[in-house]
Image 1 (tube, rainbow, N blue to C red):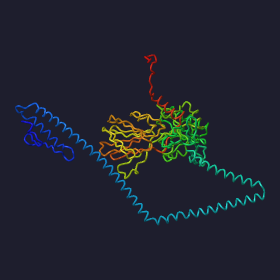
Image 2: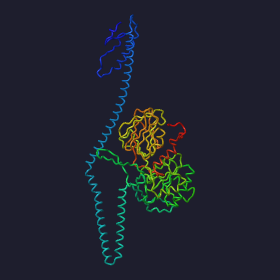
Image 3: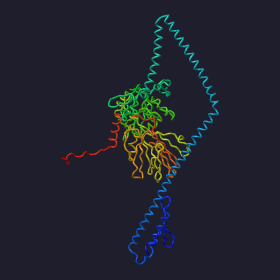
Image 4: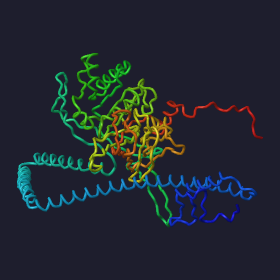
Length: 583
């Protein structure tokens, strides 16, 4: 047998396999042809050697075996690449179909509204005329009445001038007082708009208590305050945003918004809400002492939880002046009555206080009666001095950002059809629950694909929660004044999956894909667990209502002290100085 017997269409064995050297149109060799080539090489190698086979033929057979292995690996790589490409194409088509459906639904709604408005435009015009006509009549009557009053006042002034100067001065003083009052109201409104954040609300106290001396019809003004930003002793009435200069084609940041926030009372606080850690004797004793001191020394109205009020009344009937609420509807109105919130417990009590307010949150003064205390800088032994200083003001505060979380089910027509939103101060966790399978989550940031999480789960944390679950999962510790969203995986099955910190203005969407082996579970600040089935999504964005907490010194000092004392951060013995030294 000589090498000349091998040609481009040579057949081996019994003719059941052939190798073709013609190049396919797509540039790749067909995988089935690869398998036939390998089989043909094996049959060739198993044939009985012919007398006089030289070493060149042996080397050629070894080369054929190597080529067969390379062909097999190429076929496997091609099959894997085709499978992966098919999967990504399926995901793209699914997302594209979903976007097209949402766009069609939006166009249908617009067409329905347009047709409805065309049909009922005449009816709407008649209804508007029917509503506006009484208003116009009432306006004319009011103007006429005001004109008569002013004419009567002028007539009285003229007659008073004719009769003597005493009545005239009295009328002038009353008019001047009215004008000054109007000017002060206008100045206060303009001042709030000019200098930053102010609080002015007049409320009616509707609480009734048979044993209380508080009048139900008494008008109560909620304490007003102003926030200012200062740094190194320099006060400023306005928040200093980043100022960018473009002079001569150079981009320069002139000033940054890194100043400490200070709260100054414009009127004395009148109402305080006290929240306590349950099932603690020491906390119960401290609460009774604090309530008695605030009422007797500071003359402040006090709200407590229904459970705490029962405990206080059990101890003494003299606590009948303490107020509480009856249902959830009154809890939603607490921010309109309460000037200050005091928590007696640990970080969990601060989380509970923040969860009670679904909108704006009054300033919180947290006293440390828990374990670690990353958010509780005040000590209970000196509560009188602390509260006296805080009630006088000004005080440094930390604005702790919260996440607004919404669950969108697969059956929803669009992302506006969500369940009741949930506010979290620490983190929202998406995990596998009791399932033994890996969690499979698709993550998007403002509709841009981020990654696919395969592991135990994912943590979306605030910077205040960076020292909680996110820290245990390998995330970084971040100053609470830094606005951002921490993206931390839980035990990812990947060596290259590192945590991220996303900017505050983005919206993070976590979707459970349809090919997931099991549903996922979401928990919000460690409670309110919700199941996420295939197709469900979780939307997270920065909430517009931060949680203001009082600082003992300032936000940076309190943060560094908490990680030093609570975590013993970078605690190490100092290297001995009497060892070897460089000359």
